[in-house]
Image (cartoon, rainbow, N blue to C red; front, side, top):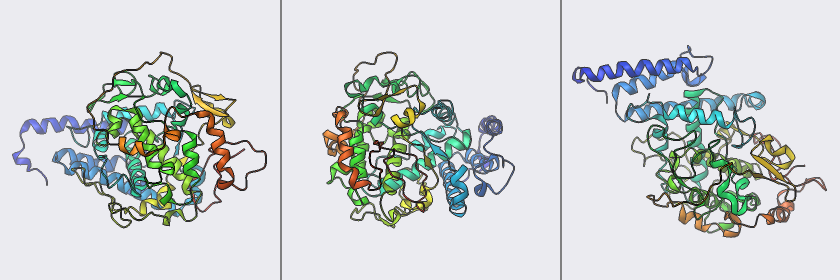
Length: 466
């Protein structure tokens, strides 16, 4: 519903007169792509014309429709890219697919630093609603509801949600930015020194305990971030990843009664470990590390998809709140930006092709050339370095309902716990080597991940490599 301009006070018009030119100037200064003056927005991606079309009317109306229009625009961008990818798949394989790297992978300037700067810009962007920054609008979508958790739609819903978030980052910062994934097994391998990881230093995510007052994400507009790392829960071990990848159908990795292989359960334990906002479903997405964690969840899911036959059709049944042909639900969010996609369609290759993953750090790839990782030659795994200033224990941030705690409790402690015996990693991998991979050359060293091109029509890439 549009507001009658004759009833709007002159002061409001003055406010809009100040805001709107600033929005346009911002996007002119930071060009989205080379087609800024084209009018066929959604075939070419969001550009200046698109923002004029959706953001300017949004600021004019100053009501909930503004957020819905913006999110619909982002969805149409994703849909257009997916359609284009399906038409020119082979061409996009070489150069056109955005790549997600591990948070600490080099080069820092075009990986994590670019992501952090894009988040800052999104947090300072008030072009959709002058009373709420655009990052917070997207973060508010995540409520922790049962329609997107605790079942088969968990994987597909969060894949689409992550794409929506990245579309917003690209819209305000540029087409090359992606969300780096946080491989928490690199920190899990630190054993009882996990709380000292460089990940929670000013170089990366900043303050580990209490309100975030240091680093890139400190004191930004909108909701403030709180953490309490090393809380009960656990980071994901390589044992856990190997166990998940040893299964042969989605139904084996989404059911909480099969806890050893429940990928969502392992994911939940990390939410609890980070603590603070990450521990509660309604606040988790306000911490920028949420997206990096879910990018890793998506990465391992893609590795799994490439190991099983006909992954798009392998949608697990038996979850009343996750019916395969129901539209993905964002209805707990008051603006209800439901994209026209079903739970089952989220498993399709068309969305998987939109991102490519760089290999996770390993000793074989020099730990992604990161100065913040080192190779443990005895265990043949990469491990995070420690922050330069020692991090000690601190009281919990408190104030949140631990939505993820019950899910995390399902994960077996010997695999998911941050205090798991990391020396068993190689043994666990060897135990499932023959089951997962039969064509590995004799005598090849184990390496959990290798680069994958997300294209199911090519020969599956093994998750172990020389």
